[in-house]
Image 1 (cartoon, rainbow, N blue to C red):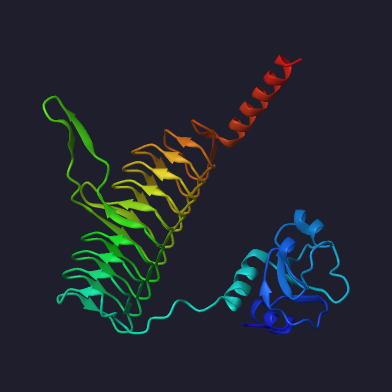
Image 2: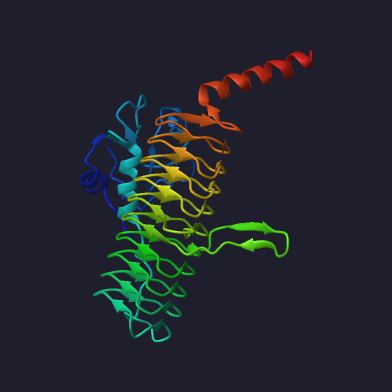
Length: 332
Protein backbone atom coordinates (compact mmCIF):
# COMPACT_ATOMS: atom_id res chain seq x y z
CA UNK A 1 0.00 0.00 0.00
CA UNK A 2 1.28 3.45 -0.89
CA UNK A 3 1.55 5.95 1.96
CA UNK A 4 2.90 9.50 2.14
CA UNK A 5 3.51 12.27 4.63
CA UNK A 6 1.92 15.64 3.98
CA UNK A 7 5.37 17.01 3.15
CA UNK A 8 5.90 14.33 0.48
CA UNK A 9 2.58 15.15 -1.13
CA UNK A 10 3.33 18.85 -1.06
CA UNK A 11 6.65 18.26 -2.83
CA UNK A 12 4.58 17.09 -5.81
CA UNK A 13 1.72 19.63 -5.82
CA UNK A 14 3.89 22.53 -4.60
CA UNK A 15 1.35 24.29 -2.41
CA UNK A 16 1.42 26.00 0.99
CA UNK A 17 0.84 23.87 4.09
CA UNK A 18 -1.46 25.48 6.66
CA UNK A 19 -1.74 23.72 10.01
CA UNK A 20 0.08 20.50 10.82
CA UNK A 21 -0.50 16.78 11.01
CA UNK A 22 1.88 13.91 11.67
CA UNK A 23 -0.61 11.36 10.34
CA UNK A 24 0.66 9.12 7.55
CA UNK A 25 -1.72 9.50 4.61
CA UNK A 26 -3.00 6.21 3.21
CA UNK A 27 -5.47 7.20 0.46
CA UNK A 28 -7.49 10.00 -1.14
CA UNK A 29 -11.25 10.07 -0.52
CA UNK A 30 -14.34 12.30 -0.70
CA UNK A 31 -14.84 14.62 2.26
CA UNK A 32 -17.89 12.85 3.67
CA UNK A 33 -16.40 9.34 3.34
CA UNK A 34 -12.78 10.01 4.33
CA UNK A 35 -11.16 8.25 7.26
CA UNK A 36 -8.71 9.94 9.64
CA UNK A 37 -5.69 8.73 7.64
CA UNK A 38 -6.99 9.99 4.29
CA UNK A 39 -6.61 13.15 2.21
CA UNK A 40 -9.53 14.94 0.56
CA UNK A 41 -10.05 18.21 -1.28
CA UNK A 42 -12.28 21.28 -1.26
CA UNK A 43 -12.58 22.61 -4.79
CA UNK A 44 -15.36 25.13 -4.10
CA UNK A 45 -16.16 27.34 -1.13
CA UNK A 46 -19.68 25.90 -0.89
CA UNK A 47 -18.14 22.62 0.35
CA UNK A 48 -16.27 24.27 3.25
CA UNK A 49 -19.23 23.51 5.54
CA UNK A 50 -18.54 19.77 5.24
CA UNK A 51 -14.98 20.01 6.60
CA UNK A 52 -15.98 20.07 10.28
CA UNK A 53 -17.80 16.73 9.98
CA UNK A 54 -15.15 15.10 7.79
CA UNK A 55 -12.55 12.82 9.35
CA UNK A 56 -9.91 13.58 6.68
CA UNK A 57 -6.57 14.61 8.14
CA UNK A 58 -5.60 16.77 5.13
CA UNK A 59 -7.47 18.61 2.40
CA UNK A 60 -6.15 20.16 -0.79
CA UNK A 61 -7.87 23.56 -1.02
CA UNK A 62 -7.93 26.72 -3.08
CA UNK A 63 -6.14 29.86 -1.90
CA UNK A 64 -9.41 31.57 -0.93
CA UNK A 65 -10.34 29.02 1.75
CA UNK A 66 -12.02 30.85 4.65
CA UNK A 67 -11.85 28.21 7.39
CA UNK A 68 -9.06 26.79 9.54
CA UNK A 69 -8.01 23.13 9.40
CA UNK A 70 -8.21 22.41 13.15
CA UNK A 71 -6.10 20.35 15.54
CA UNK A 72 -3.78 17.73 14.01
CA UNK A 73 -5.27 18.53 10.59
CA UNK A 74 -3.90 20.55 7.70
CA UNK A 75 -4.71 22.20 4.41
CA UNK A 76 -2.48 22.38 1.37
CA UNK A 77 -3.34 25.64 -0.36
CA UNK A 78 -2.92 25.65 -4.15
CA UNK A 79 -4.07 27.83 -7.02
CA UNK A 80 -6.34 25.10 -8.42
CA UNK A 81 -7.49 22.35 -6.04
CA UNK A 82 -9.03 20.23 -8.81
CA UNK A 83 -5.79 20.06 -10.80
CA UNK A 84 -3.68 19.48 -7.70
CA UNK A 85 -5.95 16.65 -6.59
CA UNK A 86 -5.44 14.97 -9.94
CA UNK A 87 -1.72 14.86 -9.10
CA UNK A 88 -2.51 13.35 -5.71
CA UNK A 89 -4.65 10.67 -7.34
CA UNK A 90 -1.75 9.82 -9.66
CA UNK A 91 0.49 9.32 -6.62
CA UNK A 92 -1.90 6.77 -5.13
CA UNK A 93 -2.95 5.09 -8.40
CA UNK A 94 -2.51 1.30 -8.40
CA UNK A 95 -0.47 -0.25 -11.21
CA UNK A 96 -2.07 -1.11 -14.55
CA UNK A 97 -2.96 -4.77 -15.22
CA UNK A 98 0.19 -6.77 -15.97
CA UNK A 99 1.01 -8.54 -19.23
CA UNK A 100 2.90 -11.77 -18.52
CA UNK A 101 4.18 -11.88 -22.12
CA UNK A 102 4.46 -9.21 -24.79
CA UNK A 103 2.09 -10.97 -27.20
CA UNK A 104 -0.19 -13.57 -25.67
CA UNK A 105 -0.09 -16.95 -27.45
CA UNK A 106 -3.87 -16.84 -28.00
CA UNK A 107 -3.71 -13.46 -29.77
CA UNK A 108 -4.02 -13.62 -33.57
CA UNK A 109 -1.58 -11.26 -35.27
CA UNK A 110 -1.47 -11.29 -39.05
CA UNK A 111 1.98 -11.86 -40.51
CA UNK A 112 1.80 -8.59 -42.43
CA UNK A 113 1.09 -6.49 -39.31
CA UNK A 114 3.92 -4.31 -37.97
CA UNK A 115 4.22 -4.16 -34.19
CA UNK A 116 6.40 -1.51 -32.53
CA UNK A 117 8.95 -2.05 -29.79
CA UNK A 118 7.49 -2.44 -26.31
CA UNK A 119 3.94 -3.01 -27.50
CA UNK A 120 1.89 -5.61 -25.62
CA UNK A 121 -1.10 -7.55 -26.98
CA UNK A 122 -3.42 -9.46 -24.67
CA UNK A 123 -5.22 -12.79 -24.89
CA UNK A 124 -7.79 -13.25 -27.63
CA UNK A 125 -6.93 -10.03 -29.45
CA UNK A 126 -7.07 -9.93 -33.25
CA UNK A 127 -4.69 -7.77 -35.30
CA UNK A 128 -5.55 -7.84 -39.00
CA UNK A 129 -3.55 -7.58 -42.24
CA UNK A 130 -1.32 -4.55 -42.80
CA UNK A 131 -2.06 -3.03 -39.40
CA UNK A 132 0.68 -0.75 -38.09
CA UNK A 133 1.00 -0.37 -34.32
CA UNK A 134 3.51 2.03 -32.79
CA UNK A 135 5.78 1.66 -29.79
CA UNK A 136 4.69 0.94 -26.20
CA UNK A 137 1.05 0.44 -27.14
CA UNK A 138 -1.11 -1.58 -24.72
CA UNK A 139 -3.81 -3.71 -26.35
CA UNK A 140 -5.82 -5.52 -23.70
CA UNK A 141 -7.54 -8.91 -24.18
CA UNK A 142 -10.25 -9.36 -26.82
CA UNK A 143 -9.56 -6.19 -28.80
CA UNK A 144 -10.18 -6.31 -32.56
CA UNK A 145 -8.11 -4.18 -34.94
CA UNK A 146 -9.06 -4.82 -38.55
CA UNK A 147 -7.16 -4.41 -41.83
CA UNK A 148 -4.92 -1.42 -42.55
CA UNK A 149 -5.52 0.43 -39.30
CA UNK A 150 -2.77 2.41 -37.62
CA UNK A 151 -2.28 3.08 -33.89
CA UNK A 152 0.23 5.63 -32.60
CA UNK A 153 2.82 5.32 -29.86
CA UNK A 154 1.81 4.82 -26.20
CA UNK A 155 -1.89 4.43 -26.91
CA UNK A 156 -3.98 2.16 -24.68
CA UNK A 157 -6.86 0.11 -26.10
CA UNK A 158 -9.03 -1.57 -23.46
CA UNK A 159 -10.83 -4.90 -23.77
CA UNK A 160 -13.75 -5.33 -26.13
CA UNK A 161 -12.89 -2.39 -28.35
CA UNK A 162 -13.40 -2.85 -32.09
CA UNK A 163 -11.42 -0.70 -34.52
CA UNK A 164 -12.68 -1.37 -37.98
CA UNK A 165 -10.72 -1.36 -41.22
CA UNK A 166 -8.64 1.62 -42.40
CA UNK A 167 -9.13 3.70 -39.26
CA UNK A 168 -6.26 5.68 -37.73
CA UNK A 169 -5.67 6.31 -34.03
CA UNK A 170 -3.06 8.82 -32.86
CA UNK A 171 -0.49 8.57 -30.07
CA UNK A 172 -1.13 8.79 -26.31
CA UNK A 173 -4.83 7.96 -26.78
CA UNK A 174 -7.02 5.92 -24.43
CA UNK A 175 -9.90 3.90 -25.85
CA UNK A 176 -12.05 2.45 -23.05
CA UNK A 177 -13.81 -0.95 -23.05
CA UNK A 178 -16.27 -1.84 -25.79
CA UNK A 179 -15.89 1.36 -27.77
CA UNK A 180 -16.41 0.98 -31.50
CA UNK A 181 -14.36 3.02 -33.94
CA UNK A 182 -15.36 2.96 -37.60
CA UNK A 183 -18.76 1.24 -37.61
CA UNK A 184 -20.97 2.08 -40.59
CA UNK A 185 -22.64 5.46 -40.49
CA UNK A 186 -26.43 5.44 -40.28
CA UNK A 187 -27.39 6.01 -43.91
CA UNK A 188 -30.58 4.74 -45.57
CA UNK A 189 -32.83 6.05 -48.35
CA UNK A 190 -36.39 4.94 -49.18
CA UNK A 191 -36.91 3.08 -52.44
CA UNK A 192 -40.44 2.22 -53.66
CA UNK A 193 -39.32 -1.25 -54.75
CA UNK A 194 -36.70 -2.24 -52.16
CA UNK A 195 -37.81 -0.40 -49.05
CA UNK A 196 -34.96 1.24 -47.14
CA UNK A 197 -31.76 1.06 -49.17
CA UNK A 198 -28.47 1.09 -47.26
CA UNK A 199 -26.03 3.79 -48.38
CA UNK A 200 -22.48 2.36 -48.46
CA UNK A 201 -20.14 3.95 -45.92
CA UNK A 202 -16.71 3.81 -47.55
CA UNK A 203 -14.78 6.39 -45.52
CA UNK A 204 -12.90 5.94 -42.26
CA UNK A 205 -12.18 7.52 -38.86
CA UNK A 206 -9.13 9.61 -38.01
CA UNK A 207 -8.45 10.24 -34.32
CA UNK A 208 -5.75 12.71 -33.28
CA UNK A 209 -3.24 12.56 -30.45
CA UNK A 210 -4.16 12.55 -26.76
CA UNK A 211 -7.79 11.64 -27.40
CA UNK A 212 -9.80 9.67 -24.82
CA UNK A 213 -12.96 7.79 -25.78
CA UNK A 214 -15.24 6.35 -23.11
CA UNK A 215 -16.73 2.90 -22.74
CA UNK A 216 -19.45 1.86 -25.20
CA UNK A 217 -19.07 5.00 -27.30
CA UNK A 218 -19.29 4.86 -31.09
CA UNK A 219 -17.47 6.90 -33.70
CA UNK A 220 -18.94 6.09 -37.13
CA UNK A 221 -16.88 6.01 -40.31
CA UNK A 222 -17.51 8.59 -43.00
CA UNK A 223 -19.85 7.92 -45.88
CA UNK A 224 -16.98 9.25 -47.92
CA UNK A 225 -13.76 10.80 -46.62
CA UNK A 226 -13.31 10.75 -42.83
CA UNK A 227 -14.93 11.31 -39.49
CA UNK A 228 -12.29 13.31 -37.59
CA UNK A 229 -11.58 13.88 -33.89
CA UNK A 230 -8.91 16.52 -33.27
CA UNK A 231 -6.07 16.35 -30.78
CA UNK A 232 -6.99 16.28 -27.11
CA UNK A 233 -10.72 15.57 -27.46
CA UNK A 234 -12.31 13.85 -24.46
CA UNK A 235 -15.37 11.70 -25.13
CA UNK A 236 -17.39 10.26 -22.24
CA UNK A 237 -19.19 6.89 -22.08
CA UNK A 238 -22.17 6.11 -24.31
CA UNK A 239 -21.53 8.92 -26.79
CA UNK A 240 -22.51 8.74 -30.46
CA UNK A 241 -20.50 10.59 -33.10
CA UNK A 242 -22.13 10.35 -36.52
CA UNK A 243 -20.52 9.83 -39.90
CA UNK A 244 -18.44 12.63 -41.39
CA UNK A 245 -18.57 14.72 -38.22
CA UNK A 246 -15.46 16.79 -37.55
CA UNK A 247 -14.35 17.79 -34.06
CA UNK A 248 -11.68 20.43 -33.53
CA UNK A 249 -9.06 20.25 -30.80
CA UNK A 250 -9.88 19.72 -27.10
CA UNK A 251 -13.63 19.22 -27.48
CA UNK A 252 -15.55 17.58 -24.64
CA UNK A 253 -18.66 15.42 -25.03
CA UNK A 254 -20.37 14.20 -21.84
CA UNK A 255 -22.23 10.91 -21.45
CA UNK A 256 -25.22 10.04 -23.63
CA UNK A 257 -24.69 13.03 -25.91
CA UNK A 258 -24.74 12.59 -29.65
CA UNK A 259 -23.85 14.19 -32.96
CA UNK A 260 -25.79 13.35 -36.10
CA UNK A 261 -23.93 13.10 -39.40
CA UNK A 262 -21.69 15.85 -40.76
CA UNK A 263 -21.66 17.99 -37.61
CA UNK A 264 -18.69 20.33 -37.24
CA UNK A 265 -17.39 21.37 -33.82
CA UNK A 266 -14.76 24.08 -33.49
CA UNK A 267 -11.93 23.99 -30.97
CA UNK A 268 -12.81 23.68 -27.30
CA UNK A 269 -16.53 23.01 -27.74
CA UNK A 270 -18.32 21.45 -24.75
CA UNK A 271 -21.39 19.26 -25.27
CA UNK A 272 -23.26 18.48 -22.05
CA UNK A 273 -24.71 15.11 -21.07
CA UNK A 274 -27.65 13.83 -23.14
CA UNK A 275 -27.46 16.80 -25.52
CA UNK A 276 -28.12 16.11 -29.20
CA UNK A 277 -26.99 17.97 -32.29
CA UNK A 278 -28.77 17.92 -35.66
CA UNK A 279 -26.95 16.86 -38.81
CA UNK A 280 -24.91 19.41 -40.81
CA UNK A 281 -24.79 21.80 -37.83
CA UNK A 282 -21.71 23.98 -37.22
CA UNK A 283 -20.79 24.91 -33.63
CA UNK A 284 -18.12 27.58 -33.25
CA UNK A 285 -14.98 27.61 -31.10
CA UNK A 286 -15.55 27.57 -27.34
CA UNK A 287 -19.33 27.22 -27.52
CA UNK A 288 -21.14 25.30 -24.77
CA UNK A 289 -24.26 23.19 -25.18
CA UNK A 290 -25.98 22.52 -21.86
CA UNK A 291 -27.04 19.07 -20.69
CA UNK A 292 -30.19 17.71 -22.31
CA UNK A 293 -30.30 20.42 -24.96
CA UNK A 294 -31.32 19.85 -28.56
CA UNK A 295 -29.34 21.82 -31.14
CA UNK A 296 -31.17 22.39 -34.42
CA UNK A 297 -29.09 25.19 -35.96
CA UNK A 298 -25.59 26.66 -36.12
CA UNK A 299 -24.07 28.18 -32.98
CA UNK A 300 -21.60 31.08 -33.12
CA UNK A 301 -18.27 30.85 -31.31
CA UNK A 302 -18.37 31.40 -27.56
CA UNK A 303 -22.13 31.09 -27.10
CA UNK A 304 -23.77 29.05 -24.34
CA UNK A 305 -26.97 27.30 -25.37
CA UNK A 306 -29.67 25.64 -23.24
CA UNK A 307 -33.01 23.98 -23.74
CA UNK A 308 -34.92 21.97 -26.30
CA UNK A 309 -34.72 23.40 -28.87
CA UNK A 310 -31.54 25.10 -27.69
CA UNK A 311 -31.50 28.88 -27.41
CA UNK A 312 -29.01 31.27 -25.83
CA UNK A 313 -28.66 30.55 -22.13
CA UNK A 314 -29.96 33.94 -20.97
CA UNK A 315 -33.07 33.56 -23.15
CA UNK A 316 -33.66 30.01 -21.90
CA UNK A 317 -33.43 31.17 -18.29
CA UNK A 318 -35.93 33.96 -18.99
CA UNK A 319 -38.33 31.48 -20.61
CA UNK A 320 -38.09 29.14 -17.63
CA UNK A 321 -38.71 32.02 -15.21
CA UNK A 322 -41.82 33.06 -17.15
CA UNK A 323 -43.13 29.48 -17.15
CA UNK A 324 -42.63 29.26 -13.38
CA UNK A 325 -44.59 32.47 -12.89
CA UNK A 326 -47.41 31.24 -15.16
CA UNK A 327 -47.66 27.98 -13.21
CA UNK A 328 -47.56 29.82 -9.90
CA UNK A 329 -50.28 32.27 -11.03
CA UNK A 330 -52.43 29.45 -12.41
CA UNK A 331 -52.32 27.67 -9.04
CA UNK A 332 -53.44 30.69 -7.03
